[in-house]
Image 1 (cartoon, rainbow, N blue to C red):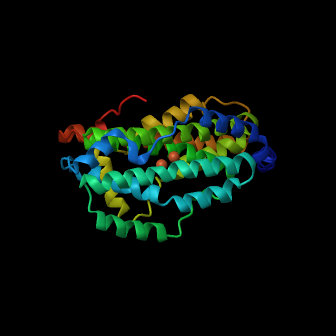
Image 2 (cartoon, rainbow, N blue to C red; image 1 turned 45 degrees about the vertical axis):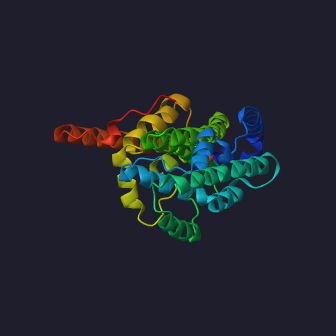
Image 3 (cartoon, rainbow, N blue to C red; image 1 turned 120 degrees about the vertical axis):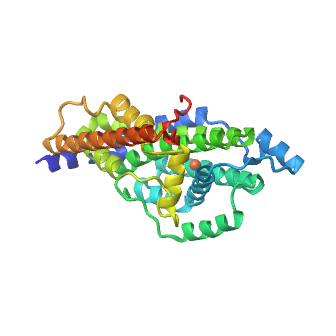
Length: 313
Ligand SMILES: [Fe+2]
Ligand SMILES: [Fe+2]
C-alpha cells in the first residue's frame, strides 16, 4: 500500500521537477560569474616569479589536496552517472553540460596550483589519477533520480567545505584564493540540487523522505575508491579538513533540521515514517560517536583538527 503511494508520488518526477530545475538553472546562470583557472592574481604572480612559496603542510592537508584533485579528475565518471540518472534532454541536459564545464575548471585550476606549489609528489599523483579514473566507478544512486538529487546535495556541500578548509589550512594566499573560488562554484551546485529536493518534498514527501534516509545513512565522500583512501581520509580528518563532526554540524544538521525539517513533517506514509526513524537513529548514533571522540581528545589533551570551527558560510 505504502509502496504504491511512493510509486504514485514519483510518477512523472522528472516532469514535475522541471519547473524547479528551470528556475534553478536560470538563477545559477544569473549569479555564476566567469573565472579563469590561469588568471587568478596569486597564480599569475607566482608563475611570473617562478617561485615555490609554499611552506610544508601537515600530511592531512596534502592528502586533502590529492583527494580533492583526483575527485575532480574523475569527472567523466560523474558526468556519465548524472547522464544516466537525469537524462540529457531539456533543462536536465542543459544543467548537466554547464555543471560538467564548471567542474572541469576545478581540475584545471587545482592542477595548475599543485604543479607549482611543491606540496605533493606530482608523479605519484599522476599514477593515482590513472588508477582512479580507470576504476569502473558508478555512484550507488544511479539511476534513481530522487536519490541522485539527495546525494548530490550532500556531496556538493561537503566538497565545498573540504576545498575551503584545505585552502585555509595550506596557509598561503594563493591556495586560499583559489580554493575559495572553487568552493563558491560548489556552493552554487549545492543550492541547485538542494532546492530540487525541497521541491520534491512538496509533492512527494514520503518518497523523498525514503531517499533522504537511504542517502544520508549510506553517504560516502567521492573518492572513496582512490587507492589508500582509508589512510588518506584519516589524515584528512585529523588535520581538520573534513571529518564526521564537520559532516554532522555543517552538512547534515543544516539540511535535515533547518532546510527540510525532516523531523517535523506530517502526513507521511507508514513506510516513510520508518525511514524517518532510521534517520533519527542514525543521527543519534553519529552524535554519540562525535561526542565520544571529542571526550577522548579532551582526556588526551590533544587539540585535534576536528575541533576547529570552519569559517561561517
Ligand atoms: Fe568541483
Ligand atoms: Fe560541484
